[in-house]
Image (tube, rainbow, N blue to C red; front, top):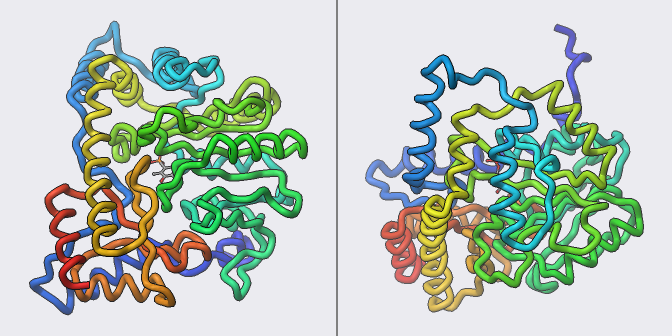
Length: 402
Ligand SMILES: *Cc1c(COP(=O)(O)O)cnc(C)c1O
């Protein structure tokens, strides 16, 4: 094959994916310390099994697939009506947000949706990305040739970074230069902080005034404990003419291995709605029937109760991390409305050096903040997805040894 046929934008990506670099470091440590007892607080993956209501729904759906009269083949590319209606009822109507089931596009994941949505836009559109944030927005734009080149300061030349730091209370300012696509993630991965109603209104107003579009990732909305905080961009007046929302069952209901998510494109954005519909019909053949029945099941009264209990379990772990680190004299953010704790590390220490020190002294693993963007330097992400007892043990080691 002639190498000139490949997409050279891939060569612009910095090194390997953050988590493979970390996995390599852990492997090396284990290689050198055969008796290592490592506690992983770096995982961005759920660990609690699926709730009984979901399992029951999946078993029932499997049985339906075994019988001629109820067997299902290809379903609608946009998702079955039963799940789109359940999502509207459980997620939007319940919070007083009007939503049309036809605006919900069910998919097999938000990671692919947030990356695939770029197909609807021209190559030279200017993008704004929070810093720090989930690396998928940036990397997928680099692959598409929209980010420019990586500069010495760790930033891509054509990307507008929306700094989210302790200094601005994790509420980014509006972009200073013109952008047409704005990614927002709230509650944020990795900082665990939530964008306020005022911040979201500011961005919605900016988008409407400047003809920009907000791509709002709400993967962690179910972790918000304070009902007065915005759970959805569509709680903000004016959002329906300037925002798309991405939601996932991955963190909400432990579906990281089951795979189900949805993207909301309001019909007010009629062109984008039609384009995404066309895109999905052409390139996607729907989520499995069994999986969609599983997703529907979390919205039954019992299913919702069980779902909330699992989330409460993770939030209990998050609370312990916050409490123990604070008691040890550290400054921490997040962990109140998200399963992530954003730990301020000692001044001057690099977050990758801190990773090595934490592993060597405590055999505890987390994620260096700089892996999520230049503004993540000086911070470290711990997650509340791990086992409760093991997390307590990790914090004991941190208090005693670090
Ligand atoms: C985990 C996560 C997702 C979910 O991705 P899926 O593909 O649905 O599993 C989306 N956005 C963020 C910020 C996440 O952390």
